[in-house]
Length: 263
Image (tube, rainbow, N blue to C red):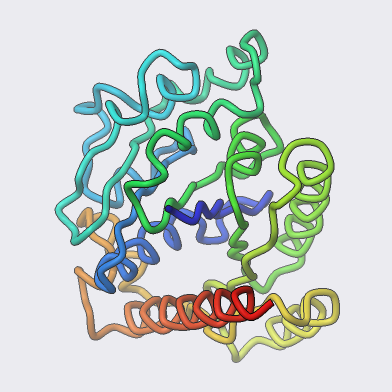
């Protein structure tokens, strides 16, 4: 049964889609079956896997509105063990249309329940907003992975997201938890980087991943070739960082499962 992870931050430009694409590819290389669900109308995750949005027939839009089953939207990518539910610009209208449907916060959850058994991990790429689409992701997920940059506005986005998670936990999804915080576009030369890391550590001492994702030109170049960075340049620092993050994530998961069994 899949673990559903929403990759979210209220701030844009922090590496959510980049993390979904590269994390999924690394999990796939570890023989984990992964489904990525692109829930952002920009469709960056979709194009980063080399999928042409104009060729998409069934997208997240139709899935959320119940016009088609999620099974109809799944595309197998060319990358090992990775499948995708793509997004197109039509998703931008979904927030308005969802207001008129029943269980508007739980549309994605209902769809994922029908496919959960087919994967090890399902990654939800969330848009940077407080709209019904990310709320759907938070209602559907088991945990939330939070990519963030070492900048002031990224910290603001983190605090807003934590408040959203708290509200969703109270009203819709009592078992939701924070998977962890992953620093992206990390530059150790900047004083601000150390300040932000120390500030986040104060409030979330056990939630920071030790691995950080550096600023790396190969990570930035890979989407234009429609490939995750480990397929574009496996020896790059960016590829090595995402592989290290994936290994740390799986190690943490294994330890948590062992602890739960011991209880």
